[in-house]
Image (cartoon, rainbow, N blue to C red; front, top):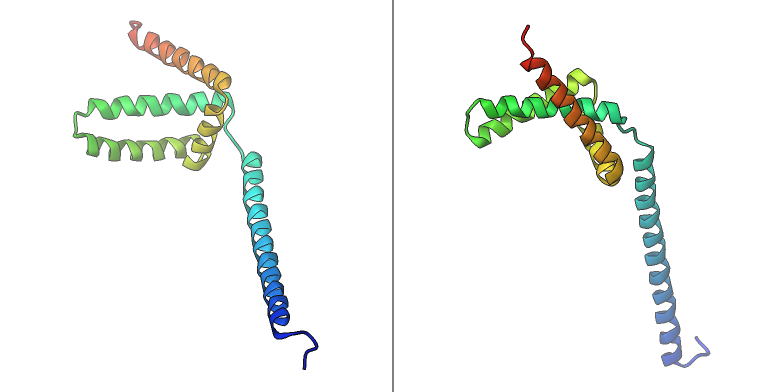
Length: 136
């Protein structure tokens, strides 16, 4: 038998369940926040390509894209062919497409550094073009 009237006992029970539910939601939110923040922390420690490596990769990708464009095939076929070219490029350079994408995203978040990369890319492509135009 309870010494409390039935209405008060019911309220105390509801409050206890409510607290238990609130505590559970707090724990879930804390764990979710912890997992998300840990995932973001790992992103900073994952490797990215250096600027010269990025220039080399972008140069090869650009040249491959031009080769595919010269094939004169429909766009959807060209896109599939270009994806195959990119995989070969990444294999030859010794990187994965995920490292390239992560590096690209990293430099896109830093416009000054990305500008340096694109300046070097244009210089590299110009130099290659000059070498091709020179008589042998």
